[in-house]
Length: 227
Ligand code: DC
Image (cartoon, rainbow, N blue to C red; front, side):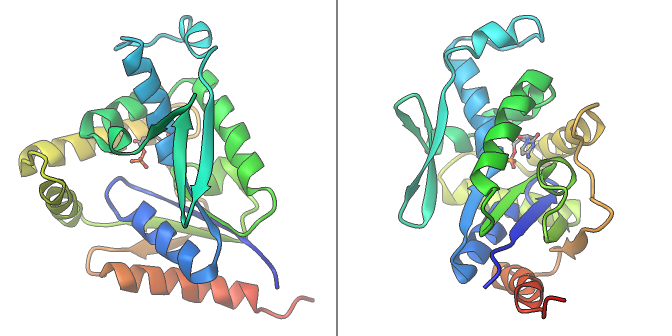
């Protein structure tokens, strides 16, 4: 059976990672959350006390940055050096800082090389911002996720409350708008729908519905007769 590459891109808080994880589970594929890799760089720089990185300083700062993803059960866990990172990467300020550091070519080049290595054999669902456009432009299935701002704010708000973190809807909306704008307007690998990506609008969908839609698209391709 063909083991395809599924690229899921889209705006923040549209449910990309949750959908990608569910699709990977349904197909017994590997899920790679590329955002977690950018968050890992952000976390690493934070630990070094860096708050405003520059293109000049970054190559040296990243010299001792080593990232690896380890499969633990169904999850891929991120390690920087021998430090296992989980909750650290899910802090809202790390998301914002990840978006800031992701504009630098030196950061993107390193992570993209690793993402391509991880996905080269297929059987992978990778979510991010530039997976269908830059990392795997030949991915068999590309999905671009979007949702109304109000739905995304609500989703993030409930997630933060569930995790026992402070949540304020106005602040969440501001953060999402600012981050999407930065991700869409950066000069390299901006967040953009690939011309051949299918749009998945999740405003009125539940998570199981989102997953089911992508699985249906994937199966159509996996089981399509090859000519
Ligand atoms: O998917 P996420 O919210 O965890 O991503 C955090 C930030 O990382 C996002 O705002 C921009 C950056 N990112 C990126 O530039 N390219 C990717 N493929 C994934 C994430």
